[in-house]
Amino acid sequence: MQEKSFAKNLIANVRDWLSFSPQVTALLLAIVVFMASGLLPNGYDSLRGAFNQGLNIVRLSSFLAIISAGQTLVIISGGEGIDLSAGAVVTMAAYFTYSIINGNNSLILPVLMLVIVSGGFIGVLNGLGIAFLQIPPIIMTLGMAGVVQGTLLVMTRGLYDGAVAPLMTKLIARDLFLTIPGMIYLWVFFGIVMWVLLHRTRFGKQLYAIGVNRTTARLSGVKVKSMVIATYTIAGALAAFSGFVLVGWTQNSGLEVGQPYLFPSIAAVAVGGTMLTGGEGSYFGTMVGAIVIQMISSLMRTMQMPEAVQQIVYGAILLSLLVIYGRKKGLRL
Image (cartoon, rainbow, N blue to C red; front, side):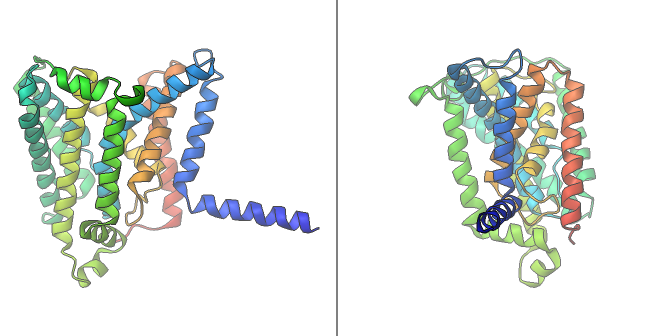
């Protein structure tokens, strides 16, 4: 009798732990998906193959997680916040990086500053439209995405010419210490910076405050409109930084290079446990969510599913999470 009671209590405790730890649930999901991928005909067939595939998934997840960083901030800020211009900003930054650097190592830092400032400027415009013109975030960022994408098309006429600086390839794409790609080290450092920003700064505290309830935050002395503008500015700068890093990895650019990351970046934030209504979440959760999404993506590619089916899966994940979170909390003002 006591054994049955102990088992019931243990199961209840584990259920409670998982229910309050979306990151743990997402991590377990990633492990299950990874193990399932090994059962497919094109999956790994040895311990070494599993290690190499796992390392490659983490490496690919790092790009998605960095792109998702700005999305995490925007969603935490509440107000039905979401940044649909992120993909276009990534594409813009990739184009600037590829065409201006043109294989010159000495231009890396100047171009990095240029793309970050450019992305931040797009973010400022998004923030101003949302904070002062009261344009819904989805409409504002979607419109800005069209402006950026159209401007790039006019500037390039669909033609890209340039080259990646060798130093970028060396630091980002190639293996460094312990045969681990430089991109993974960059991701770890980036994760630490994001943790400090969200949990050890005044900005982070006020970000969660406006996500929980903007009226209460305003009455507590938080400058809500300034915070909204700052959040979208940082999100734009982070998306641009992602485009810069992406070029160092792919060694190429294109008119749609950032678009495939848009839906997955939102899904990664949601899977990682960040409340889509705002006020709750963490970048660690987004990192885990990025791994899960990348695992699912790799699994679908292994099964040779077309891109359209992959987009359907991402959309289904988002809708499912909206239903789950929608029942947990309503949208906040």
